[in-house]
Image (cartoon, rainbow, N blue to C red; front, side, top):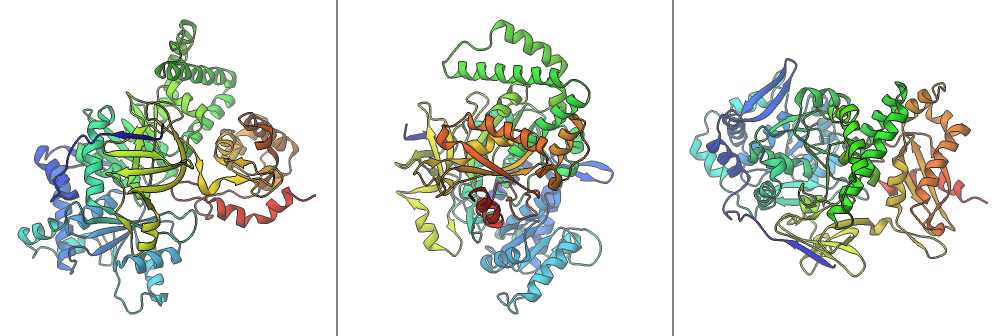
Length: 610
């Protein structure tokens, strides 16, 4: 199949914008709980009417400070309730939000401020304010431009949220409404900069229409997640990522209570306290949960029991998935009986990690391994994988509770068409496709063909319109023998192993395929404990024969997926962790392949030395 579409479910008023969704929510249920604001004293509920009042007050303060319709305003912060408040206040004042990842370097911050034209910057705290001030003071490109830095902290030196809201008391509701309603669906709501796996980030112009049309159509498309009484979700992905922003707007519109968790360190505690009913995550979270559950079982002497429970979950999910494709009758009686036993003994503990109330999870950004996907489905934490890019306002395909196939990224969203080009590239047309690259018409023109956006990803559509991602065009390796290799399946399989944090398959122009392996520090510590070994550093582990033998077994397992010509012949260890902070992962935890291979070029050369 070369093309698949899903019809639009809901039309949108061309003269509306994102703020109309908030006004509608408040009219429909003013006392409904939109947000749970995490404070030192616990979670504080925020009603729709209270949120609108706070948004309006801050918007009036921005207008009093000279913000005009269409003016860009940057936001540099971890995910938080304040981030959400600022985002909607910028829109309410008629502005354009320019998110900046809180891990961005000084050079990236400067580039985004220069390219977007943002001269107001909301920052998380004093430390971030000092960083931005340093960037501005040293920037020749910004010149003498006045940049106003506003802290999200409510106390201390002004300007901060409270002080900005205070100066807006002289702005009338009429003036606020004039600026709020200035934008329509065709206007830019946000300039979102790509996380930059290669090159300088490009600013994607996301319109009000992108956010509004996706929101109005996704809610009826996923009623099991988004239209359930008491629905709650915890946002811990960075709000600088467009997927998190899209889910934020969807949740607000659907009356779903949203909480925010600042990062991975306190995530598990927050999940237990907040108890979300659905969760947006990335594959690394599922990988960590799976590895952690296995380690905990091993250390309590229940390693074999967990292995049996894991295999049963995978078998159960696989049988059910095949039945949904018309290939079999589903789990047999014996398998159902085994599954029922583990569903009382072990699977509830897995569900409890996610807070105990999760009905569905949504995974994006990169592929989740097939085995782990089946495990979570079988354990009662269904993972609905989806697919999208910054340029598509994130989601353009997704599995739904009633239409899903494990290993695929689902069917097109309403109002979206997926086409597979002759070379296998995925092309997208639809309600989420962005307006273009900011200040970069040449890049915009090159990104489209016949009205479709060129994703750069490779994929296949089955006869029912389910999309499977097979690789990325620029990641394809061609060996010296002319063999085309897609590294992603091998890398995904390797990451299933407890010891492997990241894997980078190499071999472009080389006589064979090889791999760089970065060990996972937590996984290494757990493995050493399970095998009654002393603690090993990453450097020590890289030369330990027992570790090498264990990783070789993971390589052998991965090689079973491919032909001999595509198999990994050699590997070596990167003796440091690959992280966002090290510059080797994007904020959505995608691997920056070119950065890794450049930084560890000598290690690659060593793999091919005679």
